[in-house]
Image 1 (tube, helix red, strand yellow):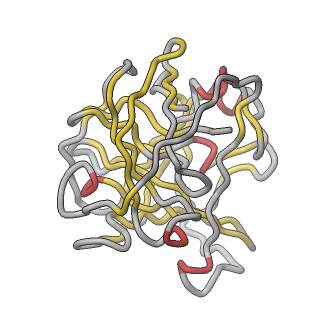
Image 2 (image 1 turned 135 degrees about the horizontal axis):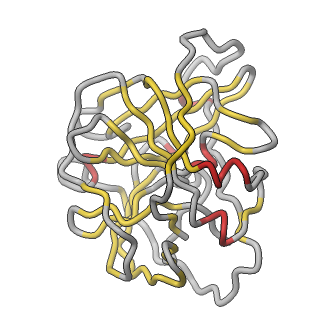
Amino acid sequence: EAANPQDIAIVYIRSGVAVAGQPSSVDEIPPIPLPTIEGLTGLTIPEPVTNADTTVQPHRSVGRMNVFRTGSAGHCTATLIENTRVIATAAHCLYNSVDGWVEDIEFDLRSGGDDPQSYGWRCAALNRRWIDSRPDDTEITLGQVAVDIAFVLLDGPTASPLTLSDARSADVTISGYPGKHNAGRIMVTGSVPATQISNGILRAFIDHGAGASGSGYISGNDLLGVLSGGN
């Protein structure tokens, strides 16, 4: 399922303090699970994925996002948008009511592919309604899916032809770093139809999983939403 941008209100600024107890390499960073979605029915067999060609768009604008808390780490996926140094990802990758905010973020653009680049971050923003809904780390509602999106300002110069757009039914490309494929080290992708099942929420069936949270629903150069949860 995909969430659409709405009412971004909460801004979280990087502290600059080193985070203790971190893995010695990215290979030791586990994928962050996709939350299950309460009451979701009508599931079908997901479409398969293949390794992505990171020399072409939209894959050149996709990267692995590693997040860190004291004593723990995890990875999701994020998509670079416009000429803004901003990436879009899932809010649950950055905040839940069990663990609170992450303490540090690293974005590896085209990780494992052509011309990889690594960036730190300056601040992150997400919808106040996401925090107010007190999301846990395992299950969310369709109402929470609608606001499960966040934006992170990177600390380095970079650009993308992809632009934010309103959610709509369309054929989309979904590319990300699920841990069950290539141990999350190499981007995989698939093209599937996405259907708008309610205002701001898209539904598609693709063989992603933990680590793919935040993957963009991309149609042409339009980013229609990000991967929020799955069943």
